[in-house]
Amino acid sequence: EVQLVESGGGLVQPGGSLRLSCAASGFTVSSNYMSWVRQAPGKGLEWVSVIYSGGSTYYADSVKGRFTISRDNSKNTLYLQMNSLRAEDTAVYYCARDLPDSSGPGAFDYWGQGTLVTVSS
Amino acid sequence: QSVLTQPPSVSAAPGQKVTISCSGSSSNIGNNYVSWYQQLPGTAPKLLIYDNNKRPSGIPDRFSGSKSGTSATLGITGLQTGDEADYYCGTWDSSLSDVVFGGGTKLTVL
Image 1 (cartoon, rainbow over the protein chains, first blue to last red):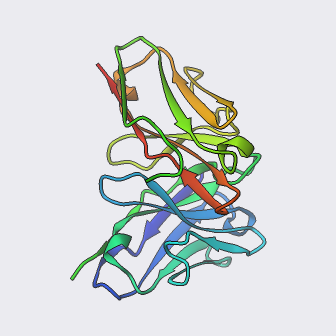
Image 2 (spheres, rainbow over the protein chains, first blue to last red):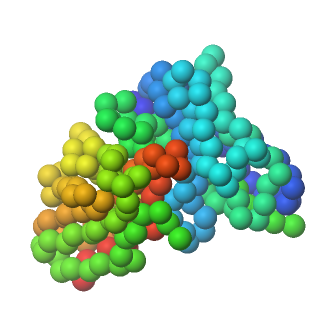
């Protein structure tokens, strides 16, 4: 059974850092496109970052230069290192897998339960 | 403001049909595949439709998707109270090199 379990969220001060983890089971992270998607309280979905199976990484302009996506193949885990956090980064962060059979990127077939990041002093 | 435009809310009676629109441009919907998601309160989004009109395993055929030009539509027939949720469209934007989403539509089953 495919499962994604996020952890690492919490309260952090503006300018601080946090690392989110997404432990996967039932499939191999390194063989798939994996993304982070966030949702601010009461707001819609916002794509944050993707890491392709080949290792290429891409970021939304809103987080470029501050966030880093990575994976640990030995742990089958996806990460999001978040630095220089701002109040507007406050959101539930989801990791999600791109559907392998889709014709294009952005069809996320499995999502984690989400982890809340609150940036506040 | 979201790159893709959805109506904030739609409503219909149980058993009826509803459609939710998603409008974009040639850089996103017009030249890429659209997905649709259902998000029940307090839960993660769930993929309903991908590649414009395909349903993942386990999604009932009450849910359908279509695309024409730079717009896409999600259709739901035989509405049930359990369908009350927020619905999002999403696609790749070739100009932004980002996945983009609509602002979401809240479905109320009266």
